[in-house]
Image (cartoon, rainbow, N blue to C red; front, side, top):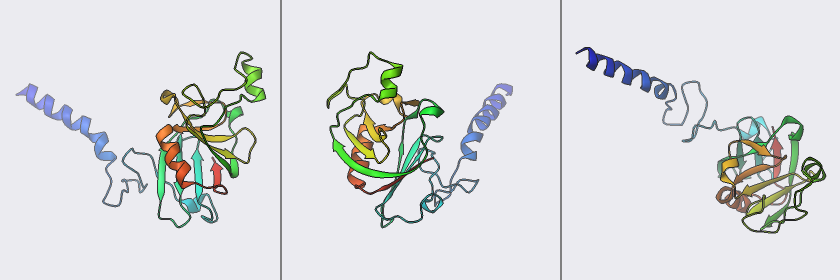
Amino acid sequence: MKRRLFIASSASLLAAPALALTTDEEGMDVAGQRRNVSSFRTADWRDHFQSLTNGAILADTISRVVHFWSEDESIYKLYPSSVPMTEDLTRRGYTQVVQKVVGPTWRPTPSMLERDPTLPAVVGPGPDNPLGSHALYLSWTYYRVHGTHDTRKIGRRSSSGCIGLYNQNIAELFDLAKVGTQVRLI
């Protein structure tokens, strides 16, 4: 009997954290935060942008997630991301998409070459390209929201300044965003 009681009480303790994260029918958790199925907190664009003109991308370097809102608010997407390795590589603020490239060519930045002079000068499109399958070029020199073929990087501090997404996610974001989409890195 004691063994059954122990097993039953252990099972209830293991279930307690899951109960704490339960959500109501509108996706709100017990703390009043909206969550999606992967447990990332969703965000409200109004906390970061004055309007949704041209759509909006929010890259959260703490949560390691990218949010996208369409101009008409009909589409909201949330993607896990990689973020810069260190604070000195992290740029924050407002920018915008200035160019979209399928099969981008990668060139290391001067600071990357300073840290590692053995880097190749250029890597064309393909599986060895650090920019993955698609890239959204930002108005800040050297900064991109791009894909990666190295899926181990997603969810980690692993980039030299850019925001990385799984290739299937950047392909979707690439189709949703346009030149002029506003971007904020926090």
